[in-house]
Amino acid sequence: MSTGSPRVLPADSGIAEAAAVLRDGGLVAFPTETVYGLGANALDARAAARIFEAKARPSFDPLITHLADAPDLEKLVGPVPPAVAALAERFWPGPLTLLVDRPAEIPPIVTSGLDTMAVRVPDEPSARALIRAAGVPVAAPSANRFGQLSPTRAEHVVKGLGAAVDVVLDGGPTRCGIESTIVDARGAQPVVLRLGALALEELVEAVGPVSVRPGSSGQPVAPGTLAAHYAPRTPLRVVAGAQPAPADGGRRGFLAFRERPADGYAAVEVLSPAGDVTEAAARLFDALHRLDAAGVTEILAEAAPDTGVGRAINDRLRRAAATWDPADARMHGPADRGYRFSYQPPESEVSHADRTRHHDQRRDLRP
Ligand code: TXA
Ligand code: MG
Image (cartoon, rainbow, N blue to C red; front, side):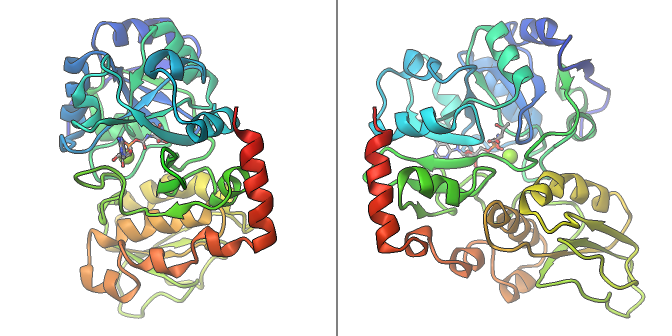
């Protein structure tokens, strides 16, 4: 961990200064609607290299390029496949990342040498104002050290990255709390590479059936889709529901989805008393950061309902669990197999009639 502190500026009044830092090749952490990003000028290979260094991120894990406005996409990469354009038009600004061909202006380090580039327009006014003011596309992974919990508050960034970042724009807690959904829509049927803040249901509603391969983002290796990722430092185990603490005197934390478990835990976080997956997602990483700081020896985490953004919550929990106890992870469904088979791909969730309707909608969406 880096010692020292970055400059922390308000997300509104700090934009001009932060944009100047980006243009000078510096690193700026900024809020998006999903999580805080660690931004650098995406046209500058040296600046992008600093991201990998600051995060201790392996060079094989490609970055997402952020744009201020949807029309900037074709200005940067030229014409894109119709389904990609339709998804961008429908969901940008928003928590959807799309794959396109990497344009020559973007140095290969940004995409870890891949021919494809992941790109999105965040739905957060200060992020878009920053990118606009910088006048360059901004490469930004989540602003945490590699493999650790994503930051949903400026404090998480300061604590995790310290002076490795030049400036942190503080815009308060992020709205969605979970990373963007990554979709490769270049082929015949869109492929979801990472479950995220844009729910599968919304995606299917817009484009019809999609296939879901959350273990396959990025070649040669699957980055935020690595089995073990998004992990607290405390060992974490996924459990099916609220349950009493094991009576062995251990200090444990419990991450509840809806209901507070019976006594016996040293720390408890409830994600959504109303049982709302969207609210739960918004609180997920913040709650995990707190449990991680609570001095417990193990975190038990209750799985969310496998619907909407709940799927992304479960995806993150299983990956967090996979870091620590492969035996347990196997027991509860291993990160790379468990959730993949724990729900039916959306294709089988839509009836034939729906499917026909979706196809019609898909045609409607095409420019
Ligand atoms: O919500 C988000 O997406 C946040 C905010 C800051 O925008 N960013 C984020 O970035 O989550 P990061 O780096 O933590 O996760 C990016 C994921 C990684 O799993 C990476 O492998 C994948 O995107 N990715 C990037 N480029 C890719 C590509 N060309 N093909 C496949 N996957 C790619
Ligand atoms: Mg990340």
